[in-house]
Length: 257
Ligand code: NAP
Picture 1 (spheres, helix red, strand yellow):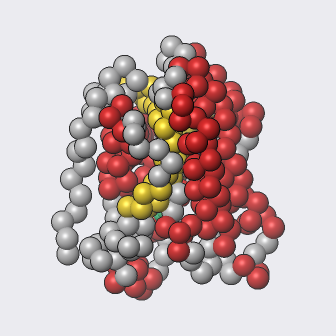
Picture 2 (spheres, protein in one colour):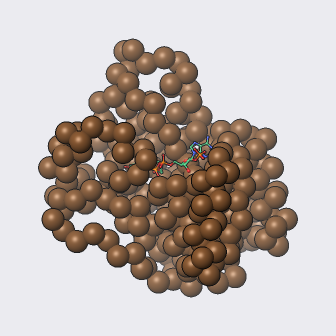
């Protein structure tokens, strides 16, 4: 098996503020930690405070700065309130936005209930739109920003049982490409990262047999770790990545190549 990742992309985000949604566990927690290690003050957003507290503790233990904000990303009211709170807390600026919050409600589409469709679209796609709209306005005024939206290889390849999820994440791709064009002239880049199979709570529920089958389909022959995603997100969040926008980058061990 290939080596497990050793996170460590080095960028300088000192003096910057990063907002990360879905930061209470999994990929979002790894991203928040890595951005904090790079010097950013991190606003961590999720619905449950217990998970947020654990992320804050890990960041502070590593010497970083972070605050937690409880919100449902699919609520316009919550999103606008959180952005106002983050601005008030961190001096009116947000340089980095990572839209990572996401859910699955899997099932074959012929039997899919409206609720399962709506919940996944509202969280994964509408939530991304709401945060981009709220923070994008601020970034345009700043004439600087880095937006990174987390999509999925399911949006690129499709995945049986994930019609709602694939549609939501494909929506994130089109949305990312469009707003990248709208914001580019203002110094704001917008990119999407498409993780392959990453070991988190989201994938932990799958039977071992399915995980073994997935591993067979990954050319590097290992499942991904949250840090694999956090490293690329950290680079995209850096001032150095100024000529990179509107891109969809798969981090999937070669699954989609
Ligand atoms: P996870 O472990 O289930 O974590 C999901 C995060 O999203 C949690 O922090 C959760 O916090 C938050 N969240 C969910 N609904 C929310 C809402 N309505 N409002 C605010 N926060 C919400 O998932 P993960 O595996 O780390 O996935 C992170 C992202 O990567 C997702 O967008 C996912 O679709 C994507 N992705 C994952 C994989 C993978 O293999 N794991 C592959 C491709 C793409 P609360 O529950 O506390 O709100």
